[in-house]
Length: 344
Image 1 (cartoon, one colour):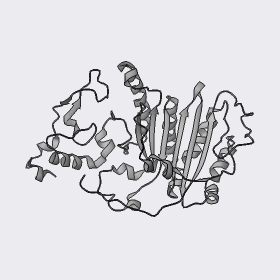
Image 2 (cartoon, rainbow, N blue to C red; image 1 turned 60 degrees about the vertical axis):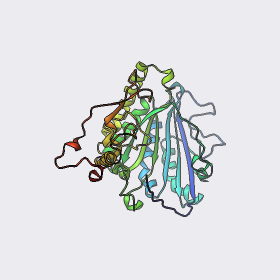
Image 3 (cartoon, one colour; image 1 turned 60 degrees about the horizontal axis):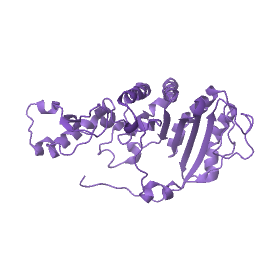
Image 4 (spheres, rainbow, N blue to C red; image 1 turned 180 degrees about the vertical axis):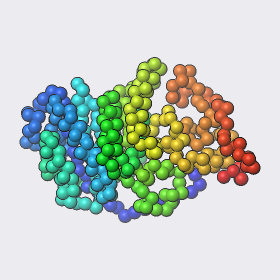
C-alpha cells in the first residue's frame, strides 16, 4: 500500500435498542412462560417454553425488518446461540443514527408489538440507550483480546433476498438450518451502496457483492477448542457439518460472495467469493509487482501458485510452503509481455 483515502465525518449520535428472547424446553424459573417478570427491561424476553416454532417466528419477524432499519441508516447486530438441553437464545442490538431515545423507541415499537402478538411477550415500550461502543471498544483502545479457536464460514446476503417473499422464506429456512446443525448464527445488517459511499468506493478491491448486501452472516462452531485438542478425523467431521450449513446459504445467494476478513480459509471458489470480477485485475497487479511470490497468504490474489503442506492436511500454518505447478491462464494470452511494467 502506497497511499490511502480516508473520509472524515462529524460525530454522529447513535441510539441502541436491545432485544432478546429464548426457547427453552423447561419452564423458566421466573414464572409462567407467557408472563413477563415485573422487573423486565428492554433487553429481557420471555422464554417461549416448549414452543420452538414460536421462537423461530420471532426471529423471522426480526429478520424481516432488516430493509427498514438499513434504509434508515441503522445497523443490526444479532445472534442465535445454542443453549444447554437443546435451548436457543436470540439477542440483537439495533443501532439507529440521528434518533433520540423517544424516536428510537417509536421506530422499533412495531416489531415489539408483532412479537407480543405471537406470544413472545417482550416489553411493549423499550428503553433505548445512547450508544457507547466507540468509547469502550477495541476501535478506540487499540487493545486486542488475542486469537480465538472458533472456526467459521460467512456469506453476504443481498437486498434482493428480502424483496421477494418466496426467496426471503427460502433464505430464512437456510438461516434456521444452520442453528439446527448446532452452529451459532451471527449477523450484522447494514447497507453501503456505491451511491452512498461515493469516491473512491468504485476503485478498490471490494467485491461488488458487498455493495448489494444488507446482511453479513457468520456461522460459528463455538465448541471447537483448537487443533491442539482436535484430531484430524474429528475436524473433518466438523468441517463437513459446516460445509452443509454454508451450502444452504450459498444456494440462496448464488451471485453473492463473502467478506474476506471474516471467512473460511477453506472457502470453495474463493477467487469469486472474496473478490468477484476484481480478481483478474488484482492477480495481474500481484504478478507484476511481486513476480517472485515473496508475499504470500492463503486465499489472496495469486496464491494458487503456492500451498502450505501439513502432515495431516489440516488448514494450519504448520508446514512448508511448496509450489503447486498451477498455470496462470493469463500467461497463455498471445502478445502479452511478462515484464512487470506491461502487465498491470
